[in-house]
Length: 162
Image (cartoon, rainbow, N blue to C red):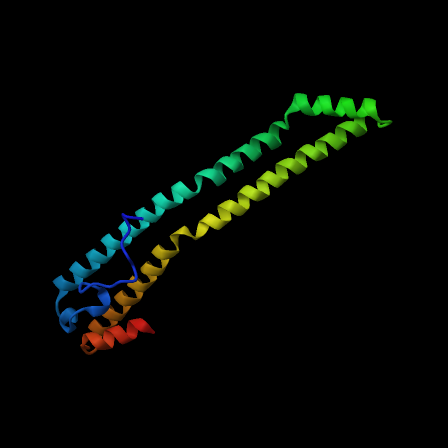
């Protein structure tokens, strides 16, 4: 999408390329942390918009299947059961049971189809999760290096790649 930021391309402000004075510069650390929060929230909202757009059809199918399952088109099903009873040697009760089974099978088919489509659209927030994990690991590494001896930016980058 046009409003999404590329997450695989790191810029000079990227957390993995921070100056070695980060442990001593609380203001710089806070700036980078706020920037990460801002970028993480932008990614989340972009993916939420995408999730909303991609889940419309499965949601409509799901609601339709629930309506069909609940109502089962009573007049049409009753008419079909009575016709089945007249055309065959089945009792009215047996004809109604056959029509009920057919209506429930149709509803179940629609329900399974919509559930599979909804499940397939659940991977939409994968990029947000991966980026959040990367940011969290960077934060832990930066905070840990702040508590121990100062490191240069290359050492911090190596820790993040693990």
